[in-house]
Length: 379
Ligand code: NAD
Image 1 (cartoon, protein in one colour):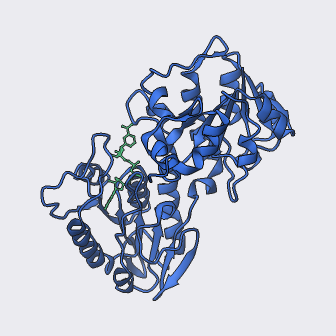
Image 2 (cartoon, protein in one colour):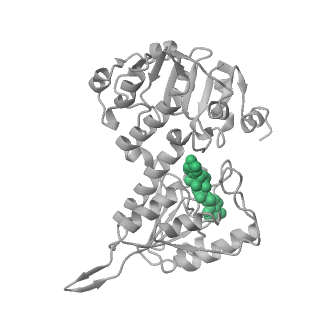
Image 3 (cartoon, protein in one colour):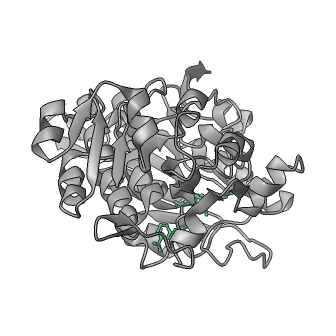
């Protein structure tokens, strides 16, 4: 059985799916790991590190793809790579099954068995495989550093001989994994932090990090689904949220937004008027750019300025911390792959309560209703 690690081809991508530490673990399970030359270089691992871990390194990408039983990736590979994979081979990575279900058509046609890390259930048993949480942790941390580096004031309150400097005020919208990490990081830097989320359950987590939770009347609305994710809320609740945020924005130095609803466009929380009401020099870091952004003025992938307010909307922030992002992701993937390796061979149990739900495509068929609908032209 051969597991292959490719050099990522997407622009700006510097992470690698498996780091040498994981290669050592997998080869210890009697599977062969082949690595495309240079795959880990930007994530701090050279070819020699992979070889020392028991991997085989080659520069022949095509040959690697043709021989692979499992291809481990960060991003969905380009069409020419998928075309070279064996029928029945396994692909594991961020495949964007809910945001771009139509793009999985090639995998269906090729007969590849595709596992999307986004579909791995957020259960206790699957915690060690939760790549969404790993990347969100990195992203929430880095967003605060970007804001702190850009804002023309310091984060902590300082009492000096020249007088006292007040702490920066940070507002975090969306208190999922990224938002909570942003709150924790901003608090460590000494900022005064407010958090907001439509899920009432997020309030306790926000407060436990020493931040204030902003609340609005949800009108008795059920805002959380059975999986713990936010539901889309009514326009009335959205309006109330935007008003509260606009009011709070006037006295805020940095806003970090991370609000998402799986499979839907990101909710619009920071209006043009809210931005206009902010102090000059304030900064917004919008982390929801891949689904449209939480700020009306955000331009995904760009940083713009409006009335003296900088609005940054980075698209792949995890790739700016490639060493730790790769290390965490690699551990997640290795933990997932370990479920389907037995005595050095593939043993995939689709009835397993992690493997089954994580499978997006198998035997020329889409397994997730959202992908099925998209491929049938219904989405
Ligand atoms: P996400 O990226 O889907 O969304 C980020 C946040 O945006 C969520 O907290 C969501 O409630 C919030 N949001 C959505 N619409 C909003 C709106 N209109 N206004 C304000 N906020 C809005 O979330 P995530 O980080 O992937 O986490 C989703 C859920 O999964 C959370 O409940 C989290 O605690 C849970 N989770 C569980 C586990 C586990 O048990 N293993 C691991 C990770 C996350």
